[in-house]
Length: 269
Image (cartoon, rainbow, N blue to C red; front, side):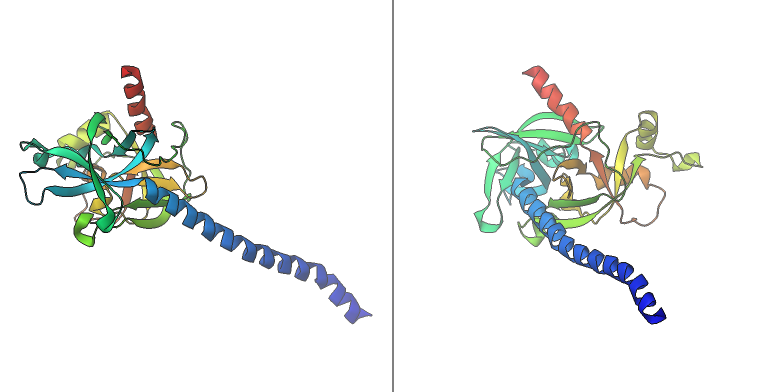
């Protein structure tokens, strides 16, 4: 009787454990499928952004990444970084902003119009005369919590690795100010002082972003919505100035800054 009693008392626990394992096994494929689907959808809206100059060689140079945030039957609006479409190369005669759509030999190039830009947030909006699939933006006032699973899609290292879009997966690590006070005044730069006076909060990401990823969308895997735009280059110049070696941490500007620029376009009509 005692032996039978011991088995009967353990049975519910074993059954619960077994059910939990089954449910866990069933959930894993769905998570993987969700990630693959979100990555595929995101890549369709990602484009390359660069400079086109018929007088230079090569005529087109890829400088960063962008992604479609709005589209009509004939036009699309693309978000990218301000620093991607502003630089010495754009000062040359006949230089224009160019957007590359597609991959490898099937890539097509379109001239782009600069609609709006914000140097402080390092965000710019472009327009091209072609209809492209757009990504959904997260609400302007919503902040993604730490540990949210994310992905970024773009053209890492530019065209050096070929015109192929790559996806990287990681997590939101924290929501932090772009610049932080320093213990020594010699560690302060003019740019850092400006940032401290007018603080801008950014996402700190547990993910690897490369130079060509500037302007890549940061997408919440669960919702499929864009929560931020990659910008490690300029954020590191203020937040990590005192480090002798790069930290490997990536940063991104919240999608609220893109919403602000979109409002300026609508206001202008």
